Length: 178
Image (cartoon, rainbow, N blue to C red; front, side):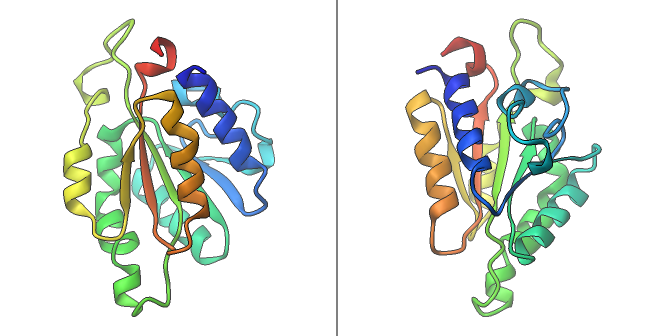
């Protein structure tokens, strides 16, 4: 089993769930390495977004509150930082603010950008997993470095019963390496 193949299989499995929607940059059209894992997801399940990370996170919260299960796709951790305020002040605090009555369950799918075969620039390859883990109380942060970690992580995030959001961090270098 290869890293890319397992991601693709997992995204296709998530697409079979009646409440899932993929939201984000290159969720519905080519543009980054992550799109290839979504290319066979039904087009009506993938909502393409402009580069507006904060709005994308807010929209994902709205989808969750409306009964959908969003998989919010961010190809680079560096740019997910632009949604940190929304993650730390809305997604992460909703349960506490509502006395446990409202829990925006979602997957935040993000990658460490690949730097092979060509380095795209330092603003595309950051890994902020330690900062993410230190910033959240309610959002679980899971890093998947091996192919056999991928499906269980996404399955757990989708099937969990505690209503928590899950950030899953992939490594773009492994799409072609492992």
